[in-house]
Length: 141
Image (cartoon, rainbow, N blue to C red; front, side, top):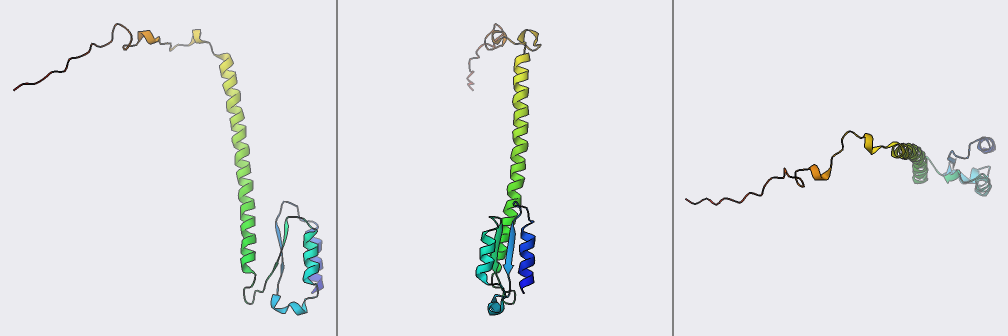
């Protein structure tokens, strides 16, 4: 029916470019009775942009269903890509905040006011309190 394709064309003009669309030409088994030719549909789809796809199918015998399934995967991967982009944006914001905090902390550091100073010379390994080496004992019985 011509009105169905005309309606699809009208709707496609209002679909945002970031939304994937699949135009399905159904009743492939009755293609001889199509009012709109395949070439006319392909021509229109080609002029709409990357987000509009075309598929011929026949639901009576499931012809074209692998293409429909593949399109659904495209939609799924589009959603996943957007989610990953949001995660990357959030991670970049957190990294920027951590870098800013690191710079601020580095500028504000004052070792003379740091309460936990330890001199390496005061540790037992280097100072006078270092344990003496113990000779191994040999047991004789």
